[in-house]
Image (cartoon, rainbow, N blue to C red; front, side, top):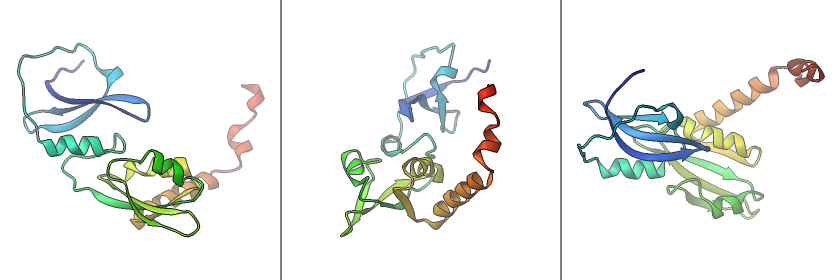
Length: 165
């Protein structure tokens, strides 16, 4: 078991998993800890101050993949008309902006992220109703992942004889 001192910032849920977001070490490195993995917690009497910009970044994070010290960049997404209402009802984050509403009812939105994996699982979840417009590298990564999935073989070959399980 390892022991270290943390400066806890927030307890947050991402995709149904609870995490402690904290600063660790002398240089206050941002760390994320799955709550079920923590034990032997001792509350210390010391207090600390932290940057309000970091607090804002935590509130804007889409997932546990966010990074400290990385300037956010915008991802532009095309939403099909079938799902627009869901993204209006519950935006992906406080950074979601409507960039364009199209005649067919579809919409282009953008969100700010600090790591590509903040958005990739979300896009995959909403396929085929959402597409990445830019940055191109994210769209290409998703396409590569999908190609790999499809090329992995016939589902019957991969699953084998399920009845024998």
